[in-house]
Structure formats: C-alpha cells, structure tokens
Image 1 (cartoon, protein in one colour):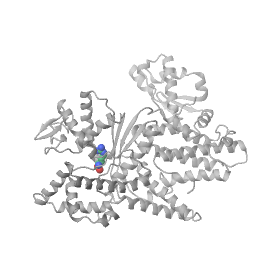
Image 2: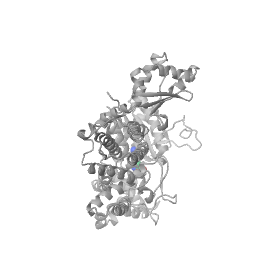
Image 3: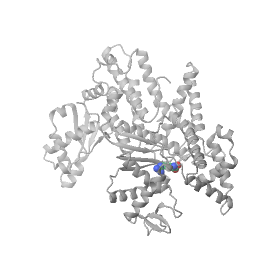
Image 4: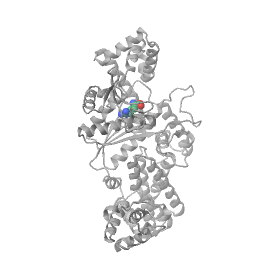
Length: 589
Ligand code: ARG
C-alpha cells in the first residue's frame, strides 16, 4: 500500500519508533511537515518540544528515535539528523516511482485525498450578493474564493452544500416598491434589470426624505410586503428572480452552480424561535425595546466597553435584521443540513459581525445541547486599483462584473491571437474565455486572501510569473509533447517500461509531484487556496527546469517512457490542481 500523503506515513512510523525507543507516547507528537527541498522531502520537528518538556538533550533523543526505525523503512528513505534535533527524510527514487504509479489518474488522486473529510457535511455560504443591486467586486472575490474552497472540501471527501445567502430582505424594499410603482420602465427592465432596479431604488430613496408623507407611504409598502400583500410580494419575487438571472450569467462563466439560494427572506419565519430560545436561556436581554446579546468576556462586545456594541438580535421596532437571520441560518444549517462545518466568505469588514455571531451561537447551542459545527468566517481584503484606491469606474461608480470579465477575455484574446495566429478564430475565442476568466480567478487565488489585492491587468495576464496564463500554458505545452509523441497521457502501454527517476532534474520533479497531497491539505485546512496556487506554480517551475535539462522524446525507449511518465503526472496534477481552483485547463493555447 502506498499512502497518499507521506506525511501520514512518516507520522505513523515515527510514533511506533518512539514507542519502541521508550518515549512517552501521549506526550510525543512527531510534527512531520514538508521540508525545504535542500533539506530533503520531509522534516520531523517533534523531538525538540518533547526533549524540552523532559529536560533532555534533543539531539541524543533524535538519535535514539532514528535508531528505532525499522530497517525496511531506512532502506527506502534516507534519514539524517540536523541542527539541535530535526530529523530529515529523503525518499529513495524507488519510492518516488511507486507513488507515481499508484496515483496515475484523477480518480486515484481523488480517492487518496478523500480520507480527510470523508463522512462530513460542509455548508459554504459565498458570493451572497444583495438582490436588486449590482454585484460588486467583493462578491466576485467571495465567489472565486468560495468556489475554490468548495472544490477543495469536496476533493478531500466532504459532502459540500453550496449556499448563496442572498440579501433579499430589508427596509430598502419599501423604497424600491415605492419607486417601482411610479417610474418603472418595462423596456429598461427587460434590457438591464439590475440597472433599472438600482435607478428605481435611487428615485424612491430621493422621493422619500426623512419626515415626509412619501416616506410614510414607502413604509406602508414595506409593511404590506411583510404582511403578505399579493401585489407587493409578487413584485419582490420578481426583483429576486431578475437579480438572480443576472448573477447567474456571472456564475456560469466562473463554473459556479449553487445547490441553494436560501437568502435572508427564507429565515423570516424562523427568527421567532431564535428570539424565544435566546431569551429563555438568558443569553439575550431587553435593551430599550431591542433584544441584544452582550459578551462580557470580550473587550469590545461587553456591556462595559467604551462604546457598547451588542449583537442586535431583534431591533427596537420589532423587526429582524442581519444578526437575526444569521442566527436562524446557523441553526437551520446545523439541524436541516446536519453540517459538520460552516464556512462563510465575506470581506474583512464583517469580521465583528461574525465574531459576535459565532460567540452567540456557541453559547446558545451549548445551553440547548445542540451539536456545534465548526464555524469559519473566511475573510478577504479589499480590491484596489494600481493607485491603491478602491476599484471603481472612472466616474466613481461600481464596476460591473460582466464588463470586467469581458475586458479580461478581450485582452486574453489579443494575447492568444498574437501567440497563435494560425488557430481558427472561434478556437481562439474559446481559449480566450478560459484564459481571461481564469486570469481574474487566479489573480485572486494566488495571493493570501487576507491581504488587499491590487488589480492589475498586466500582471494577471502575464505569461510569466505566478499567473493563470503561465500555468495554463504549461499544461498546453505538455499536451503538445504528447501530440508530438503520438501518445496519450497516462497510457499504461507507454508507461510500463518506465524506470525510477535518475537525473537530478527528474528526481526534483518527482519529489515535487509527491507533495501535491500536502499542498491540498494545507490549503483546505487553512481555507487558503493560495497554498495550492503556490504549489502549482513551483511545480510548473520544476517541470520547466526538467524539460530544459532532459529531452523527453529521445530514442531510448526506457528513458523516453520514464520521462513521459513524469510529463503525464505533471499534467495530471497541474490539471487537477487548476480545476480545484475553478479554472478550466486547455489542451492548446
Ligand atoms: N449579503 C451580504 C453582503 O452583501 C453577505 C452575506 C454573507 N452571508 C451571511 N450569512 N451573512 O455583504
């Protein structure tokens, strides 16, 4: 049996060696991780902490541990001790080949990865724009990052529920209905519904100033909607439908298909239970007519904070709000979907809201004896232009995502046409769609999501560096080698003659290929896809070094088979990795 991640294997082997060497098993954790390439393949650091807690010499303990490793292990793995007691492991070429033969198809990779979250259900709440409004760049980031997280979780075995938590409820609908009933233009509504709804909302807003009878009228429209007036409910449904239709055009281009669109309105009839339970358990309290939760252990959410900022479970006018629906949502996801994990992807400005939400949910579920899922708020920074300012159109408006993706594709088309003028135009168009949209996705996924990101067409579309075009091109080049060889990637007939990797560049590439499981795991556990991007970028670099040093299509059938095997595994892992990030790899570019 060849394990998918060698980290797991080393962990197991080291634990049993530790037992044989007389370590206290409960206190020793091997702490195996991927090493910097110059130190070997993996490194175990656990002896250091263990030695410290025992007040013993770490180097001597490391030697004792290594001496207890079974002989068949040390035959296939070179083990060295470095510095104060790090243990380094370097796999023998035979082990590299065994892994490459075991994980030869997308299905085999998936089967290897599936153990991490097998049997678990994860709900991922992402994109989640507000209806009757233009989706903005933040919702695009959320969509791109959220989709990558869904794919990583699914690949590692989870049942993933993709939920678009639309902002489809709230006081703004009173003003929108007010505007709609007076000024709606059916032609404009058919041509660009969101644009028209935004115009009508603005008109409604300006026509209803504070204290005016018009505002009273807008409020009556809202009350009618909330109490089920058929006309207003029908209007509101229409707003949601046309908005979703427009959003879906963007999602289609990004390869996103939600399982559910359970927006805020879905939780209307579920907030009463929240009010009741939070009051019963004494977590929520009345504050000037509102129902609020304080967290006194928290410096900013405590009632004694300088500016008390409680979690607003129910507003003073009795209406529900963002906190109310999110509490009901957490309960629904736990009870109805039986979620083991909940991930919500929004920009960092909502951090306080989710911190308060999670604190409240933890106390509430504990008091009621409900099972608590893992709760994760996945945040990301702002998108800025190259001038460092928020990304806006020239006149200061919101950038339309369709226009943004169209521009990416147009720019990619120019690049593809220059590179490959002989390809027919429709093929160049199809390639440009994958490269352009992929460039926008990858620009987001290649950086740590916590930092702000500078939107730069030149950078994201460059054929050099950690970009989508660079990686997609690397994939296309490997395909072209197989076309030249008249072979299919992964064909057993081509590969059966392959021997162990031999040259330094073959070995370096094979060693990098074996780290794919660890990159996937790191990206999934931290919910940070850029770890996978970085790995793919480095893999493409090792491949290119190999390709420059070792000619693949040589006459010697054994060398050729060995190198073709490395090409096909690089291709498999690059394609699998890019798909996990939501990109569409190409065979030609
Ligand atoms: N609609 C919100 C916004 O546009 C994002 C919703 C995120 N999900 C949630 N469960 N609160 O900012």
